[in-house]
Each structure stands twice: as structure tokens, then as C-alpha cells.
Image 1 (cartoon, rainbow, N blue to C red):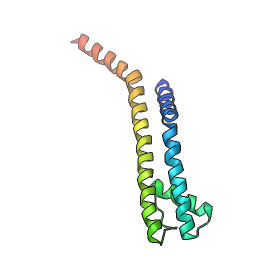
Image 2 (image 1 turned 60 degrees about the vertical axis):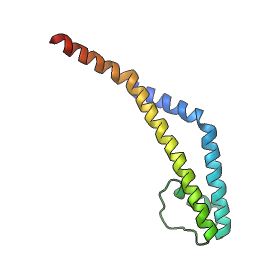
Image 3 (image 1 turned 180 degrees about the horizontal axis):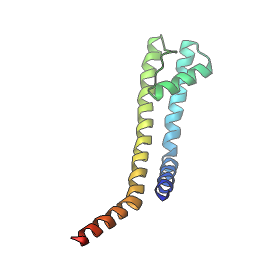
Image 4 (image 1 turned 180 degrees about the vertical axis):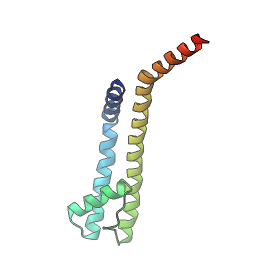
Length: 119
């Protein structure tokens, strides 16, 4: 349980610290999505839905841009989404490593020390 709590604290702290970058990347995704929606004559909801699905690289294909400019902008949305996802993955890995070092590593060291002393 301590491992999970340490993991969650570190994860939340990392997200808090990188929050301004998340806001900037989110703003870019939303703005470009609305621009593409205007080009394609989509509703705002459809434009935001499509931008989020594109940014997360899910790409259901139920809505897709037809115009060339919209397609170019969609590649930028995807690139920004990859950056966003990469940051989340990096923070998650760091939080896991931190919790591992604090809780699992000392136990492993104790276990191996006991095994060494038996020999």
C-alpha cells in the first residue's frame, strides 16, 4: 500500500509541476481542432471530439478531414498529442521508479543481505 501511495503522490506532483506545459499543449490541440472544425464545417463538439481522438492517436475514422489544410493541421495535432502522451508516460515511469527505490529496493537489499549472511 505504501508503494501505491508513494507512486500516486509522485505522479500527482509531476503532473502539477508540468501543468503549464499540459495547458499549453491542450490549448494547441483545442485551438487547432476548432480551426479544422471550422474548415470542415463541423460542430464544435465534433471538432473537439475529433481533435482529442487524433491527439491521443486513437483515430476511429468516424470523422475525418477532407480539405488539404485541415489534413496538414491534423498532423500537427497528432504531433502535439504524441508530445503530451510522452510526457505522461515519462512522469509515470519516474513515479514508478521513485516508489520502487523507496519501498521495493530496501526490501530486496535486506533479502539479499540475509541470503549472503547465511552462506
